[in-house]
Image (cartoon, rainbow, N blue to C red; front, side, top):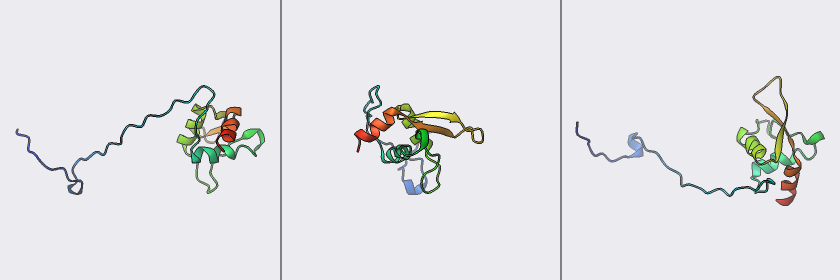
Length: 108
C-alpha cells in the first residue's frame, strides 16, 4: 500500500505532537540548596508558624496542595513526611525541616 504525502494541519485533526525543548536542570547539592518556586515558598513558609513545623494539606483558597510541590520539597530535603493520615492514606502529612527553614531564609 503506497504512503500518501499529506500536510499535517492541526485544524484538520491530524496527529500533531508539539515537543518542548529539553531543559537542563541544575543539580542541587546534598544540603538541599536550590531556588524555591513560588508554590514551594508559599507552602513551606506556612510551616514556620505551625507547631512542629506542620505543613498544610490545603492552600489558602481551600485547594489541595499539589503532589508535585510536596514531592519536590521532600526530594530536596525541605520537607519530610511526618505521619500517615488514617482517613486519607494517599495524602502526605509533612513537616518543615531545618534545611527547609534554611532555604526559606536564603531565598528571601
